[in-house]
Length: 318
Image (cartoon, rainbow, N blue to C red; front, side, top):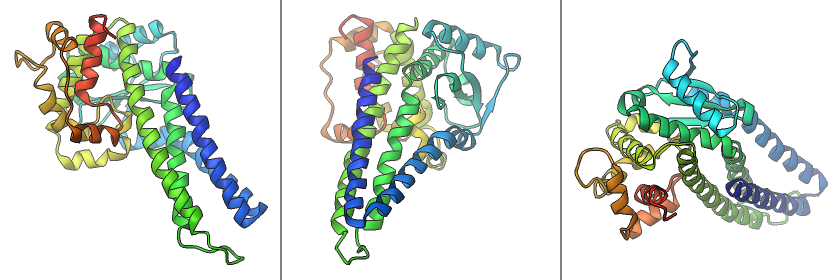
């Protein structure tokens, strides 16, 4: 509930920013200019909202599967959805060579949960169920549609900045100031979208644990996903650059995340067990300045901080 309130508040603030920019344009151009940009803003938002799922399906190569085709997957998702108190989402398998999972949809009854083929070979049942619980929690929190709406706002501001930075209106008044202000607001709103994307990951991890999955299964799943993503060719990563916010972790940061997580894997087993989480819960984690900067510019939290949060959930420190 708190996450949803924060996201809705951020959505209100950011649409308020767009409205303020439109008012500035209206002041410079007159009523016709106001209506023109209001229609553009509304049109872009509507198209993004309605076409978003189809764009994700096409880009990720999603094929929806029946219960007969993937009985184990349907069983886990159905059980988790029932516990979460939401309608069972459509289940798909993405034809990608990147081990990961994602959720998307316009509203509650339109939810879809998808896994890639490699993740089903990489994770054991407990780990896969923890990741699916993470994705179900995204749908329960309704943060997928909100993030989709939020991501439209920087795009609108970029469009305004691009068109006004060096232009003049019909009366000859310099409109460069509108472009400069829009560009600054584009940068600020983009940072806010990234921040919203990061905090929703923490809440989805918490949601997975509340659905009955163990924190160490979620932590091990993230560790294995990082390892699997680090082995993916860079060419494959470029193909999903625009959609990495949907994934359970950021594939483009996998190599760096892997180096950091090895300090948590004390027995070098390739997993993170409950004892290792317990050790991490009482450990003072230090993040380098460069990694902090990378996190600010990322759609996902720093992986060590994220696993640290799971350790605190496991041992009552959160």
